[in-house]
Length: 357
Image (cartoon, rainbow, N blue to C red; front, side, top):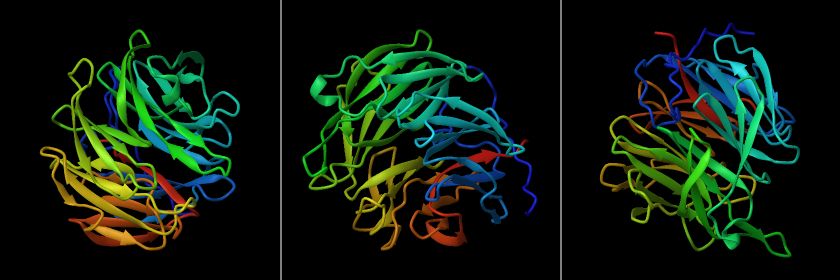
């Protein structure tokens, strides 16, 4: 196997809340993209170095991985099949063990704040809190959400300052197991006391969240996969009740987004079919004035064969988009396809990990 370049994140450990997936612009440009492939029995990691070379199937990361993030030199991979969070050293890529979550909880994502790991769960009782030593600390129950808007546990999560923003799912199924999506709330938590401060309506089928340099919370909604297309609601994080917002109507079915240092936000389109095939692409809008630059009728990139479930930016401003059904990773520079790499089976989620300065 090709020797992997040594990587480590040069992140200052300060016990404040920071989200490293597009909301913080990297100081050090050099680094690797870490990608997980999730379609085989066990997910695997691929590593893309800053010179554009890829090494696939480095190690197994668990069954049905959903999300990958990096904090203080450790990768965290959330697995639905194993109901755990795999911890992997980002320098050596050695597995450090796992945080074991509740059985059948179907975890979606994790975030980090005040020396704690926060895990969301589709079928869980709320937000599970763990230590970095893998000890279970507590479960914060969902409060402040009407019963009719609380169907499906928690999913999207974002940390900023001493606040944790958590999306509460609202999905019901009819007798034919067709999903129906309603308005979804976002919980605002105090990470010091681990209590819920307030809640507000954030969107429909919330997929992702980020905060731009204007201290605005951008909440990405996939829509109802029918007559309501994707959109972004933009909130002032300094507001008390989050009652006022502006809306960016993107259309299509977005799944994730990432922020570039010029204020542009790149949005991944997930696909039309349940298996994420049929249509995928990339849209773009300006987070400063919320102007759509490339909407669903004017995509930067489109694929008729595969949806895109995640999107990432590196220190040079290159955009990375995995094609789930094609086993490819498309790399863009200045909104033009620069490279297409062959990945493992079902490339799904990815994160940028900076080299040591």
